[in-house]
Image (cartoon, rainbow over all chains, first blue to last red; front, top):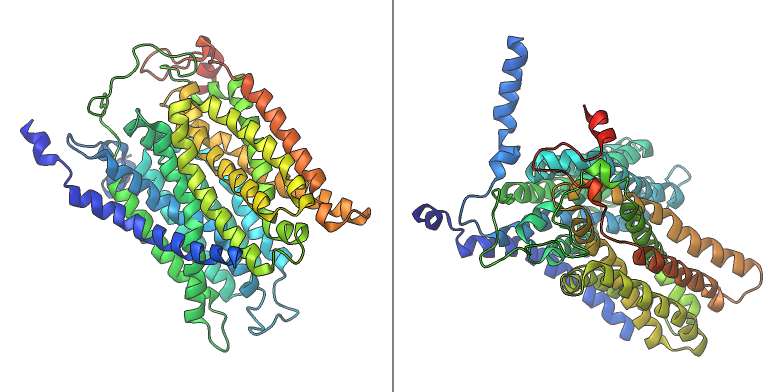
Length: 41
Length: 475
């Protein structure tokens, strides 16, 4: 049990991993939304 | 003999990091680390959907400001993407079992190596101005990366998320759709940075992308883990008995392809993809021709962007929905709703209803993405978790086949109609009705998907397949 607690993934590592993939993905989505707006202009 | 053993031991220590045993998670590992690992790979290989941004600049590699007779033609360049898509299906089918047995880290590492090599070889092809080198680099080596990378995290994610397998694979496969959204503006920006009066900047962009994707995919390979045998999420209680459409047994990969269920799902995926891919590829031209003067070139580009978002979002949302309503029912929704939407498109065109037309296309393309994201969990329900990655790999040949059938159906029927005097605004109507008809066939095939016969089930943890012919073939 102690061993498991020592090995528990730190939430910051999970956050970093998601930020690593999330930031470029959100950047891409934002750029696409900017283009998509032209459909309604 | 000693030399061979030394070599083996040496390679073992060098690549031991990639072994499946080294990726087994320790107690306390957070399973939410695995989807980002999968996304690291899928976001990179999803670049394939954005390859078209290089097409026009690559027709001016020699002339720079305008094409010269020695420059490559668009039709020649179109083959780069086509080859990579065909190789995707073939490599996923060929290497599926190796991916499953070698573990996700080895597969992701291999995919990263191939993907980066594909870009670097292509950069060399540009340097010596030889298109065949690019066909080999991006088309074949990169195509292998697409196939191996696409299937590598699928079964791992389903093992980590037995409570939500659809959502888990939906997250990864969403990344494949999202990869193009990242790659397209990034590539345009890089080409702009590297362009000079004597260079369009494609070569340097390829080198930078190859290196960046390699680093990104290696991060994914480093953080991916497989669950320890017998691991279960906290509070998760596996169903004590198999339900009608979800097996608790595993089916060996080469036994799975002998079942009618595999081929029925193959046809369902093929038809759903054929219908979606035809619309996705021709959306810009189709919208402008159906609404001349009302949907401009710029607006059509906006529609394509919006469709990319729905393609990506549909992957996650439909796959997540399938965890609640079941895979078979999800495909029934795709086929039924798709049928209604396809026959509505000509009506929207005839009445000049742009909003209705756009809504139809957005839902259609969300179901196209949803079909890809839901199918791994469908296979897992039918054939168990053990070989699902390998089975999924073989199933992806349906994607390759649809990649040819979809655009051919749309383009040739439109061409036929236009040459026979049908106005351009109505030239797509026949195709839409044909697509709707295809979905009826898909509905019927999906209806006939039943639980796999027990004779195909693997008997125990041992890898002896139930079918004696397969056992003989493997001996």
